[in-house]
Structures are given as structure tokens and as C-alpha cells.
Length: 116
Image (cartoon, rainbow, N blue to C red; front, side, top):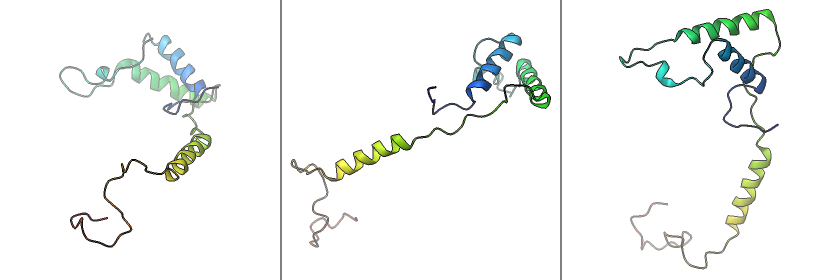
């Protein structure tokens, strides 16, 4: 199973929502424009009201699948990789003098305007 870090719904819940949207005659993903018509008054479309009723009935009925938000992705492996990059960067030598700001360890006040 591939983890989508931007997912808000669990896979089972998303499949349930897709089926419910088909049942309601709204097979395409919802668009923000459907909630903001041209006159710029907020609108709750009828299909959305019906979807809420279906979801509440599904939850109250205790039917499968259990509707849920997506679990938080496990990013420990990704975090470890980032830590390795940070450690590698700290060990690099600036052979081309690309770091600006001079020697931060010196006490001379040549760069009086800089506040480190």
C-alpha cells in the first residue's frame, strides 16, 4: 500500500465516498466553484447535503467500512535521510569561499552592520 502524505481520508473511506458520489449522480471530484456560485454567496449543494445524510446513516448503522480520516504517515525513514544530508552538509569544506558574512569566530568589527 502506497502512503499519500496529503490524504485526508483512509483508503476504505475514499472508496466509500466514490461509490456514494456515483450513487448521488456526482461522479467527478467536487470543485470549490460548486460551493461559491457567481453571486458569491456561500452555497451547500444538494448532493453534499445528501452525502452527509448517507455518511451519518452509514456511521449510525455500524456498517463496514468504518469511515475514518487517514492515519498520519510514518516518516521516520524520510527523517533519517534528511538527518544524513544535514550531517553531510556540516562536514563539507567551503573550498570556494561561498559562505558569505566572513569569519563568525573573529572579534574584529570590520562588518559593523552585521548582527549575528
